[in-house]
Length: 129
Image 1 (tube, rainbow, N blue to C red):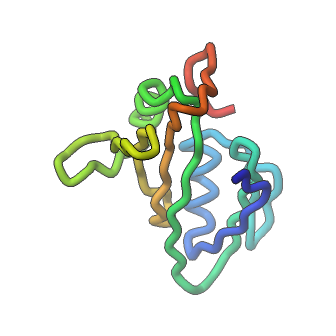
Image 2 (cartoon, rainbow, N blue to C red):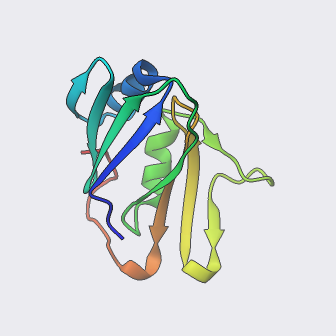
């Protein structure tokens, strides 16, 4: 499934804007006093201000040969969520997938996942574009 647009609510709008634009380097496409939008891959993410707490877990598919370089890139910017046994990455045998997790500035769990059977390799080092 490809999500084209997603709207998420946050009590931490300013911190989220800083996190996605400065920490991760995504371009802010639209910004106002109560929202901002960034393009992440093929998805437009809009974060809207809320007085209520909202906790999300969302996942980004990254090229199947990018796990190590994405992990290295991300560790320069954030702290990973380690598995209960202290591992940085998580293996999913039934999906032939590996992933890693981190928290964004609003406390959401964000996942980067590679699905090896997709054969969606890239010839460049992982970076946010």
